[in-house]
Length: 334
Length: 237
Image 1 (cartoon, each protein chain N blue to C red):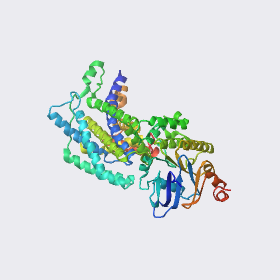
Image 2 (tube, rainbow over the protein chains, first blue to last red; image 1 turned 135 degrees about the vertical axis):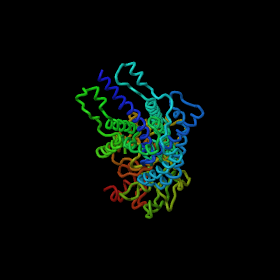
Image 3 (cartoon, rainbow over the protein chains, first blue to last red; image 1 turned 180 degrees about the vertical axis):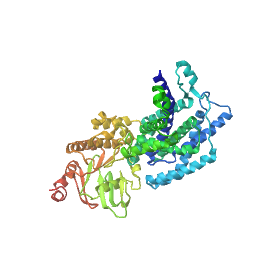
Image 4 (cartoon, chains in turn green, blue; image 1 turned 60 degrees about the horizontal axis):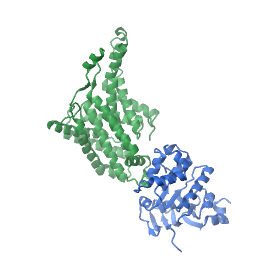
């Protein structure tokens, strides 16, 4: 029975949170990788785009709640998502029109676009702070637990209760649906194929009559959708603060680079690699170990490799290792 | 004399301040193969790119079926019926063979794309076999077939090939030339730049020998092959 308890404890602290956090990172990294693949620059504004989208989802959620519209056991934010995506897409298209298009027409080097995106990042960050404020915003409603620990204890009689938050399930399911839709779009539709063609070989795509303006616009719309969904899921699961989203930029870029920038599948794998690495390194293993070994063997230590304050360091170290030994990432992109 | 189907006449121009082409003329008739040959740096590729609108002409013009198209972008010329196969990066390496062909037909709005794809597969049976494979995983010769197939998907009236046999083995080269002859027989004009002058002139109806961006010799392929001066200077005796 102790091994079972250890497994349940492992699920509680690593597996379930890792799947949820990994799904959120994967969606964020997909947006980064898509913009990199098509527009050929690392978009530093992506973290704040997530914050921008989430801010509007929260505003719509509050509005819906004030009118008494809810999604039952599911978070109301899911109903607000399409509206948040629409506002964010309009924002990104406007940004492209005002900022990025100019540099594209100049055929600016990618490094210049990266700096430009850093500027966009600061503007967006400021905007979000003005719109919704800097304090913590909790907008999660609906049922708190998808699997109640007390029920689980009753059914199985295990000492360790398994708890699964609704937001964790929502994260994984929404991410699965989004990824399935994205891959279907990229692989099967004419517009999706033209995006891949443009990303693969810009000159030949132009020769084939593919309209670059349309490809760019569609890319921004998809990036807006992915950023808003990723941000909302993260906000539901944890909470919403502008600065936290700014900080998400690092694990998201680490995910995209681990998988290979420009590779959608790589971004997803990378998201889970980073999420699980963070949790495994910063988790206190005392509880799991307690079920597997007698107390007298364990002593007083927490069996924690790094304090959770240092979880950002995990992304950094993985990033550096990947860049040193396999700079093209797992799926060997550009 | 009737005007040729496609003609770049007295073209002068280059990429920057310095002219590469000096009053250079290139022309091709329907169903015929025209080959541009010449020593390295003679402006062969540049002449072809000028015909396709990839560099601005200071003088001269390009006419397709009597219409002056000098002001059109390369994309617009594709819509007018010109197909172009660049020398390098001429396929979508991360996409399957079939997707490459689909992208070639991107500008078409009719519903007979599958038919054209069937014709391309008849011309290059190996592509049909590998149609679900990534184009980047194919051999050099097969990649060139994908590149030519992609250009054929627009159903061009003129097919322009920039060194289609660069870097492929002699056997594959013969095979490619056979296919090019087949394409010309369907009524498509072929304009190509070739490094392998002797073999290219052997299949050409018309040959243009360029030197320093200007026409040096222009004649039928056979006549050029027989010309002692051309042989001595450009074909190695």
